[in-house]
Amino acid sequence: MQQPVGGSACASDTQCVQFRSDQTGGSSKREKTSRLGEYACVDGICRYVVQAGELCRAADDCAAFHTNVRLGLNVSSSSWCAPEFCSLESTCGGAWTLPGAPEDSPPGAESRRPVTNGTVTCCRGLPANSQCALIGASVDTCSSGYTCDSHSLCVSQEPHQQQVWIGVLLVLVGGATLNIGLNIQKYAFRKHQSRLPAQETTEDKSDGTLPEPESEPEPSGRARRLRVRLQNLPIGNPYWAIGLVVFVLGNATNFIALQFAPQSLVAPLGAVALVTNVIVAPLLNKEKIGLFDVGGIALIIAGCVIVVVFSGIAQQNLRLCMLIQLLRARPTVIYLCIISVAIAATYVFLWSVERALKLGESGTTKRTALDKWIRPIPPSSRYVRYGLPLAYASMGSLMAALTTLFAKSLVNLLSTSLFDHENQFTSFLPWCILLVTVFTAASQVYWINQGLLRYDALLQVPVFYVVWTVLDIIGGGIYFNEFKLFTTVKYVLFTLGVAVIFSGVGLLSNRLKST
Image (tube, rainbow, N blue to C red; front, side):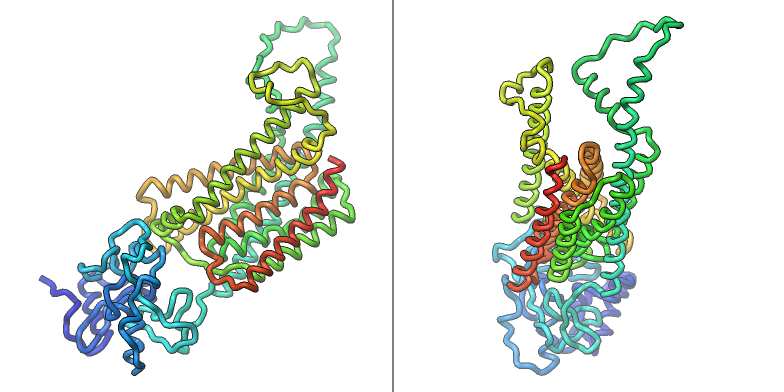
């Protein structure tokens, strides 16, 4: 029977790590580069120590405490293991659940819910610019958000610059591709609508040489409305199919970019693709661009640059346990509830205004029980001229915001499963995240197409991008906690960037007068 590693006599950390590796069948590549906890040689005995933010019973469990002791610093053991050093991730299958970890783990180690009520204690880490070391050759001793660099100093833990630039390049390509796809779909809509009157005229002509077959009874109600909607959609048009494929490829590229850069950085860069819209929309769809359009797009780009420079940076791969805890967090629940209410309210607005417009245009429209609450309106109504164009674009943006949020979660789960060899798809929730991502992505395509069917791409695309961008930044900051390192200056300048973006939308709203 193998003896436990803890308590074994040792002369160095390497010897303790070897004891643990012999019992657990060796270490994976990931474990050799970084572990949340490892055995270290403390006073001639192997002891399990953990990094900052992990659960602990006393200072002796903390790697940072032993680093200071080895450096000969005068430290008090009472300030290294306390509740204030815990976070949501502390009770999410951390260091005490790794292969080879001791069985006598601290309270909360087996919990699958966030424990933040002060009943558990966690390790403190070394502050920024402090001298540090890797205990057990793999346990970082710096505070959360920092890492021990090659000069043995705690420095800010940000994504590798090369990875960030890969993400930036992907989102720029994806945004431009997505934009081209939208304009190709708009081109297909315009061509399809121009052919409808000609087809109706041809069908009305008859030389009387052949008797016309008896027509089937005219469908009524929902069937007739569905047939009219299908006739208005260019589903069989190859240009529409090409546009849809290009749009999907652009979205897929943006989702891949989420693996290399945080959501709060990827989101605003997507709006830079509005430059593509200025070039493509006039060429494909013969939409005239005016001075207000150029000025509005320039402001949007300037605002996006400000937001990017002062956005939060906190990129990491999150396991399912952590994603669940982030979903349960009160700010995330409030954010998702607000988005859901906004989607429901926007849908009700679209339905009621469209219905009121139909009642105002034709007095013979069959009335329903809900019509008693709706007052007919003319096409010149401000709800029709201003409300509908913005509502259609906003509906697509709301769906896109949910798509990005859940797609980011899906990318994290896939990355952890494929590259860290920790299968995250062993329960219902990951598959639920996948289904929500697919549903919201399909809904996003539908509502964008409904807006492009009715209004100029030079109006729909910028409004869609701006609302989507702002919601993505807020969602990334709330759900993935990408605002945790924000200072007062960053908050002020981030808000300024958002204000500049909305100023650009204000200039673009002049286009509403011609819709």
